[in-house]
Figure (cartoon, helix red, strand yellow):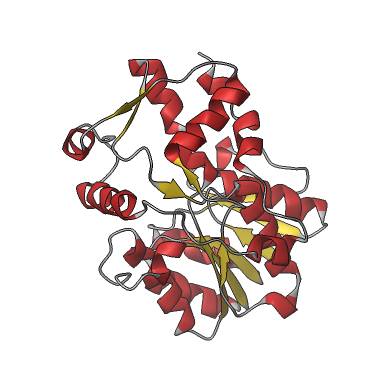
Length: 278
């Protein structure tokens, strides 16, 4: 078996490459900039940008399974090339937004849904991992803190279910290496629902410092959104946070796949406390 891991420079993809290599699985690490990857011995790299179909044939040649980040712009071509290459199974790192009633029109959910649907209509077995909020979504707060001395939140009491990227990678490893787990979807969440204020408290404890929080009007947050964030995504996030005033539902799918409880957010905070210290 040869597994192609897309997005191998990302937090989930990089963890997964190491886990597969340690298991003795043949791994091909795909990245837009493969020369920048730090890979375990014996792991080959390949140029693969999911919005550049010219990369697909070489990346997929001889591949049995794929770990696929959701990029919808060329998903039709990707599925066609994967079928031609004889790919049998694709694990999709998707979002739990696709589980909501407005998934087809929600700008966060729609690209993930398009990828899932394209694979479901193909001859390839697919296994979506519908992830809740990734723990690393908290990392940009460190940049705010450094630049402004405070973390500005439009909805500080909004709830999320932070899931550790290591748990997502371990869940993907399980599905990629156990055929009995394939062909169904899994909803991956953290072990607890936390408000953003509780996220900050966990980071404060790990960093050993106070982290000021400023509640900002949604319109002000929208006007100062990161430059890389499209406006429709910013609007969808504000709607999501406004609607998440009570704890979000949790699942046991991480433990079902990995054999251990989902890692608490405090573990992520300990690992990534450095950028918050100053």
